[in-house]
Structure formats: C-alpha cells, structure tokens
Length: 233
Image (cartoon, rainbow, N blue to C red; front, side):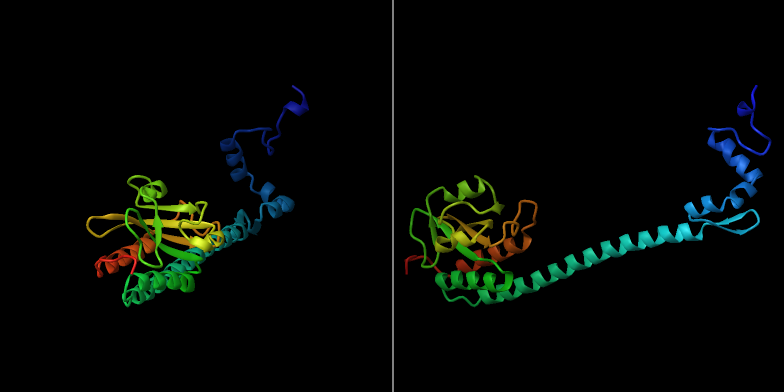
C-alpha cells in the first residue's frame, strides 16, 4: 500500500463520510482552529481553545431575515393604507350619491365622483332595450349585458371592449374596465355599471371588486327611488 493510499493518524481519509469527518474534527479541533483562511471564508472566528464563535455568520443570517421581514411588513402596511384610503373615498362617494335628485343627476354624480376620487376616465350606467334610457345613461341592445358578462355573470374586470357603446365619446380614453350587473325596476331590465380606467392594468381579472360592487349596490337602491314613468325625461 503506497503513501498516497494511507492516511496518517491525524488526517482524515479523502471523501470520508460526514459522521467520520465530524468525529475526527471533534477529536482534532486544532486543525480547524489553525486554518484561519478557512475560518474567514466560513465567516467564523476562534474565541478560545476548542471553541469557534458563530456570531458573525448567525448575525448575517439574522440581518437578512430582518430585512425580509421588514420588506414584507412595509408591503402589507402599504396595501393596508391604500385599502383604507379607498374605503374612505368610497364612503364619501356613497354620501354624494345619496343626495341625487333624479336618474340623470345620479349618473352625473357617479361619473364625477369616480373621476375625482379614484382617477377613472369615465363611469356609465347602461341599461338594455327594449325601452329608453334616462338622459346621461347609455342604452345597450337587447342581450347586451349578457354579451358583456355572460348569461349569469355578475361582474367582469379586464381590457376595455371596442366601440363607444359603454363610454361614448370618451371610449378612446378607457384602457380597462370593471363591469357590475344590476337588475332594475319591475318588470326587470338588465343593466350594468361600467367603470373605465385610463390604465391597461387599472382593472385586471385577478383583482377583487368588493368596493365597486358596493358602489353598484348603492346606485341600484338609489335608482329605485324614482318611478320610470317617462325614462327619457
């Protein structure tokens, strides 16, 4: 057996299993303590005989954990503040809608409030034929709501549909929309509120629509105040 194949008494065999290597290090700690270059690479430093201080490495890991936690906490706090601000603006908008005097005033208040408070391009109240629409509303062809939302769909968020049917002359400004279904009057007429954003990512399918659905339900209740004897008036 040659010298290259023979291990000395104080040197482990090459490629030794970890339990054997670990045991050898415990019995011969001076080899690790004397290798200052290896200790620096491992971010360790000897504190006393047979003792290695893991403080720098542990502190580094702790600092990284704190950074990750702080970043996550800041993200949560940012979302919470944004949600709180949106809820506050929604409540103010609802109070304004409750002051509406008629169907046309309600549509104008809704459009103005959502532009001023939420940065939207346009908001429209749309109702299907047969029949006419109050001034300031949009009139959709019969079956139009079903084409937008599906036969039983309650809401939809995503890219703006082509054409002026929802927003008229301001359709070019709208890049994404949120649509929420309404059922108005008796006999019921299918209707929808269309919220238009100037940003392509303003409304996306993975977003929640709780706040705009809440505004829509308020509009639905307010509309029922006035009988539709002459919707064009």
